[in-house]
Length: 107
Image (cartoon, rainbow, N blue to C red; front, side, top):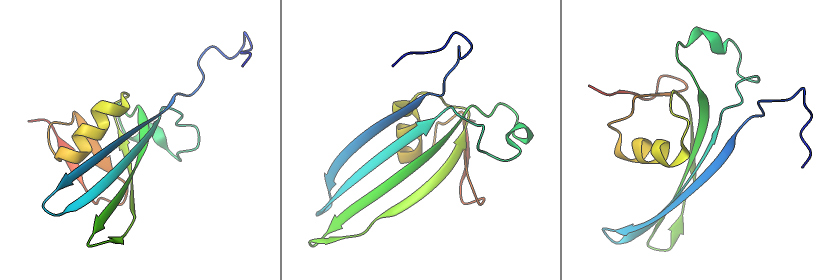
């Protein structure tokens, strides 16, 4: 891909996938993180905001598959770090789920 000289900072889009098997079920978790905030309305209102992310969880229990997607805004820019923080529900510098569903801060 050619990058024009007037486009020094292109958006970063990274993905991460984990597969876990425990307690009689399998869960596939896919994370996608983007540093492109141009499409997020009023992004400046969140101090330190650096990226937006989506976590797709696909648990398979007794052969039945369900899919859930959650969207986040965060100060993290590394998709693996974000995926770990979202999975652990603790230790994130700041992870805020859109719709006030989750608010995690390092203590």
